[in-house]
Length: 417
Ligand SMILES: Cc1ncc(COP(=O)(O)O)c(C=O)c1O
Ligand SMILES: [Zn+2]
Image (cartoon, rainbow, N blue to C red):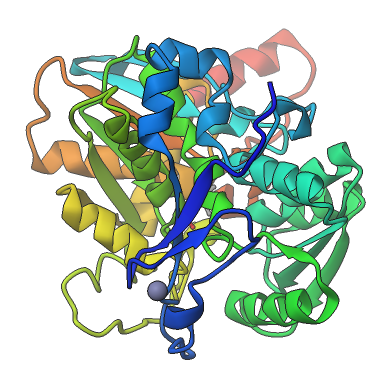
């Protein structure tokens, strides 16, 4: 199926001004004029569809789903998406943790099963498809790793050119992916913020399409597909809680946006409680939730993907959390490491520290609150543990080698016990 004209408009989350969807836009031209260094950007655009028209055209959620949610995407045809399988990741239910029966339903949405092993593929797929339809041949992104490796991979699948600007400190596995996928990697002296600013300059100067998180409104549109899938996988039921690991605040906004689209269409009538989980060492959204003026604190955490000084989608995340009574919690690096281990040994899913942060959030939440019996709780696992092996080094205790005979093996196990 092909849609003939643009089926959406942009709405600025700060001034409310609306812009025609036929233009390629990033930030609201009015509000972004006031943006300054060391402050999150104002003027983030939300993509708004013609919900009443969609409502008239569909009989229900199943109709939306049978067309892979094209009605709720800013692209004209599904063929523009990469051939790689993005999204439709498993939702696993576990009844026990450490051999203890849980009184509530615990689900893991395993987004490490995306082609480049992270949630970021959802955003890259939609951005890449849009670029294809609009005739952009080159896409640039600033990234701490996952968004860059994701864009590189999906552009490789689509025959597009990817330019990835990374801070000097990105983990080696993610850099390796970027290079193996054939993208041009530009290490930038300084931080993620420096790489971000340079990519904006390049976008203006060279006419490349920009995939920077939140700056490109379609990153949120790609990410929202996770909520549509969760709703479907729960047999069209809204979960009670979704635990989301948060750095820039784009994934969490995507999670909200997916459910918000369903609210707009009258398919659901309540928003789940979204629980924002940040690392104590990188808590710039949690700490600023009730401040009038945003104050950045230098971040430092083992969860590199959520180590963010200036959250790029601070205002949208805050708006969603306030509007829909979201909750938030922080966890220490040690809790993240322990959660990572608990997750792997209980489920067989090895998540990167940023992803394990969501699970650490659930464990911390459980210790502070009674989670209602039978409530449905989803933990978003956003990336694979193989992407950042260095962070879990501390947990590794590789035994000395044994002689290849049965006696040595027996001794080995005796010692262990
Ligand atoms: C694995 C992983 N988890 C969580 C996040 C957090 O997403 P956001 O920065 O949109 O809050 C990221 C973002 O880089 C990520 O790569
Ligand atoms: Zn505006």
